Length: 296
Image 1: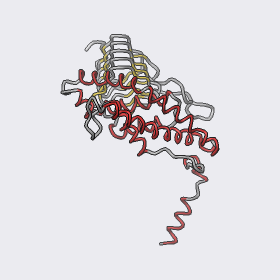
Image 2: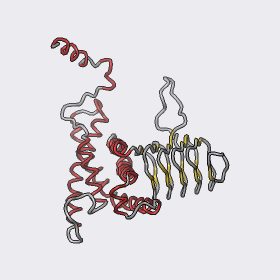
Image 3: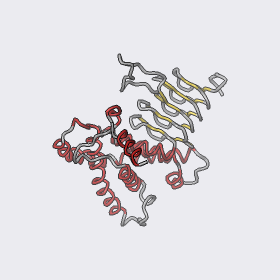
């Protein structure tokens, strides 16, 4: 039995055939940490929604101190994770010396992210309002902040999107996939989403990388904003970076389990009924239902 185990270890150690999925970490190169990123997201929640995600009681006299301590801790953790993401993304292209030089760049990106937190909080505040006003079952803003998976996924998205805009590799995707695992809501950090955004119930929602969503948009569980098809290169591989997802206008409602595919436009004020397949432009104010009429 021992020999069989040793032979298995030998087989598992032969990585030539799977070298593309075997990461060789450089000496002294930091690796991204899921646990630390979870702590970072939790710190951000504490800063953005004071009094909800901390055990210590807050009042008007301690609030500034509380936020200051959390921001200081966030800066330290985030700068390290940004560096880890850059080093990981560069893989063998970044020398040990170059990786060490990234400390200043990573710290600067972390500072720029923190400077964006007031803007992020303002957008999240509009999302809380949209969810509260859009769901009769919501009894208070606090219930929305504590309980609603849609807001949790949107929060992770808004944090990740800000990092992506700062050209931080890998880390934004990890943050949104953390929310995906916890809520069943998959929002790519590259999507552009306006204010007063509401996802109700949420399970199974997918929002693709190049999706654009306007203001005051409401969607229900099982909605997909996906790609219909995409061109391939000469080797038969998908061409990366092209626009392939829908553009959703302002004041649009998309009901449960509808699938909207391709680089199409859903006009302002449109209503997309449940269980629909949409792959063509929808004019402003249209109301689509399963009977294919433009009026419910």
